Length: 187
Image 1 (cartoon, rainbow, N blue to C red):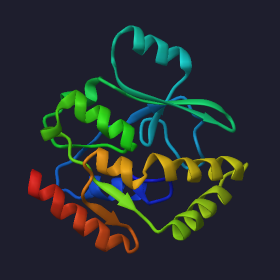
Image 2 (image 1 turned 90 degrees about the vertical axis):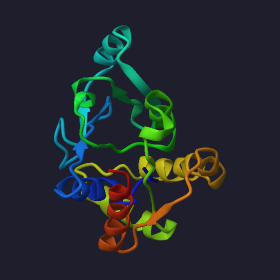
Image 3 (image 1 turned 180 degrees about the vertical axis):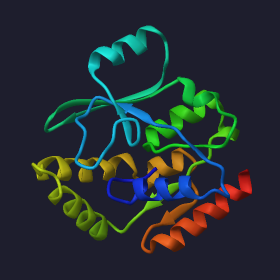
């Protein structure tokens, strides 16, 4: 987990490719539009509000977050589906809020936080570069997310969630190696 543009997706993919870790991915669901370069079922399961309602009615939602964006209301959620039947260690991307809800659902001893951080100036540069690759860049939404993350991942909230270790993603390989050492200590 971490603020936007900290490299979570890149780190996630590299950790899953590391055969020594034996990690299996958990793919979250969202009602937001797919971005350029994303694939349904890889970064997210892209769905609609109707399917979200059906999953709620079936009591399959583990956790859910709603964001009021410049493009409308977007929902992100974790579904208790076939992904959780695997006995391998699982890896997922989420927010601080989703981490806490997943930890409440599965137990604190079974859910380990990996908090990625990047200096704010560099993070803003990365967010801007990513937004420029979109067919229709939405700088207003990029700024909204940047500011929302400042509150959502405040030091106070990180302490409340008992997040003690921060993995600085200034140099990707160093960050990956530190995270791998942590994961190996649990599996």
